[in-house]
Amino acid sequence: MKEKHQNKIKKIIPNNLYLIVAVIVIAAAIGFGGYQIYSLNQEIQRTTSKLNQTEEELFQSNKENEELTQNLERVESNRDMLAQSLKDEKSKNEEFQKQINQIASTVGDLEKLNEIDPEILKKYSKTFFLNEHYVPSSLSMIEPKYLYYENDPEQIHSKVKPFLHDMLEDAKDDGIEIYVRSAYRSFGIQSNLKSNYVVTYGEDTANKFSAEQGYSEHQLGTTVDLITTGINGTLEGFGNTEAAQWLKNNAYKYGFTMSYPEGNEYYYYEPWHWRFVGRDLARYLHTHDKEFYDMEQRKIDEYLINIFE
Image (cartoon, rainbow, N blue to C red; front, side, top):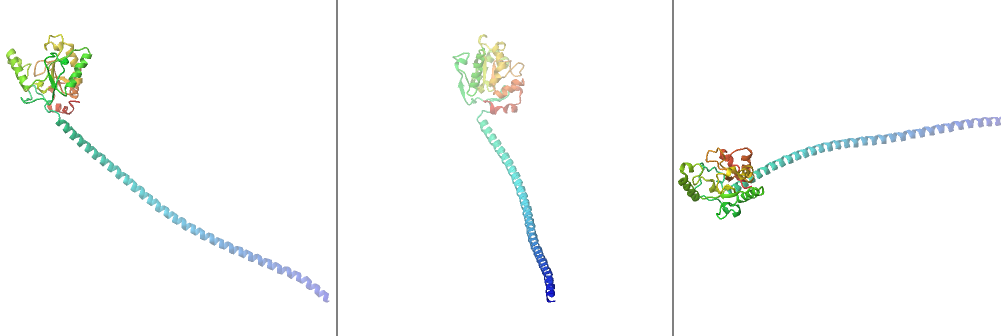
């Protein structure tokens, strides 16, 4: 009986042991699972916290980026304003410099004009008058080799002399001989000359080819009577010579113009009488087929400043 009871107990104990072990295992599993869940919850909380923190940092970063963008836009706007201001200031400076240059140029022109004889481009033939005391600012002797009568000295305005010499030399290079017959005449010389013409030819005739003293272009020192060989030293046949034709074609290049061409209202045709007016004006007259005395004086005066250039 006792053995039977013991055997029964032995059968019961293992079963209970298994149950206890199972309970322990389950409890352990539940506890581990709970721990895992707890750990997972903690990790989720940490992750959520980090995410919130990251979102906050991102928000702050975006906010800072917006501020930086706004600052950049303001900087760019200020830069554009400064660039425009600089451009405007530069434009003002350029305009100011232009005005300064214009003033300087005007002052330079005035100083230049002040050094040039204002009478030198006036229309004197029966129009303007040069008094007996007028003398060109500077006179120089013409070299004898350019004179028709080498022993009769002639003078010309010092600044016209180089242009005259160049013209006569170039004519010679072209095989044309041209010489100076007469150049500068003072008020007194012109007076004596005109008196002699009146005695010889009569006043009416003399007035048609000779100016009164004070009205002669020769008194300016810028005018010459030219002659060539083969006409016996006279001027009357000069218009039919190769020299006269060469002058018509080329004298303007050296600043000379014929004062009394055919059909002029002042004197007889004088193809030998050439007056220096400067290259610019002489070129204009030649190109436009105009005559010096047909131009308005105010237009002629515009060429004064560059007459010797």
